[in-house]
Length: 352
Image 1 (cartoon, rainbow, N blue to C red):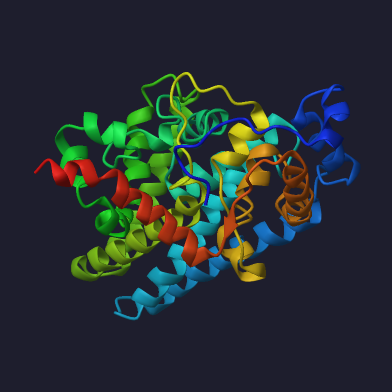
Image 2: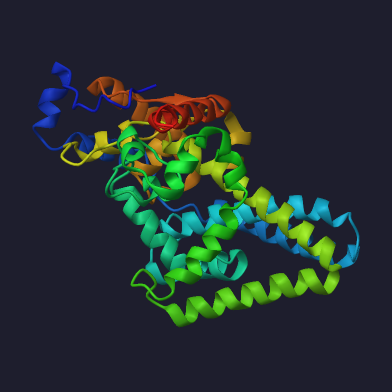
């Protein structure tokens, strides 16, 4: 993998010098991607994909109602955790305008998928995710690597106090257990953000969130006894959080961190901090195309089915430039992320 301490701009091969004179390295890659037709919308793909997710959600709700007060509902909880994960991926694609080119339908779809169906603020998440895309793995500017509970660099570890300092000592071992709370954490932060500037329509988003949880908790405690309802809640939300974390963690965790003052052009900033995950059709479906994280960061509005072809073009182009391009298997990506987390927590363990 790319060493996290090495973030230097590589030199182009002689064959690329003439092309660089015409524009940036990214502009040349962008031209090749556009010439291949990879930025055009794929309405049929998204109709089929979102239709399948909607049917799965409807089927899960129907099964929940028909089973009644039974422990068999735990199988429904597992299935709905996967469906919720797919809804999260749908909201992600809508936010990036991969589905619709215009803002209004993208926003309407995002509010439906995120607020009403998931219980997560679309506006808050989009604000956060946009800042992540602009400065991935930047210690000061990427909210996804802020030391709220976990620490992502030795510098953060050395400055950590309170809960991050306590958790950071054993964060690799605690990572997946903590993910069980991620779904609830997203909902908590969504309500919290309603009073901030990140949410432009707080009344609308707040209303949709309240409707979601009224239906969610109302359904749980109407159909199930209190004990079964709480167990269903724990299984559903816990597995949903693990699913989300398993999709997003392999993308950047353990890749180079950018410190204040480092200067990288757009292409290198996105490529060097991102990791692709190999695995074929099953991994593509499980991760919703985010396993092509490098291409997604370079072309955020590119529809999911085009990412595979873009990957081959981008990897070949990075080889021409001498820019490190990292991809690995799913399990290996998690090992790299956990190894990094254990490494950056070492100063906290040594300080005990």
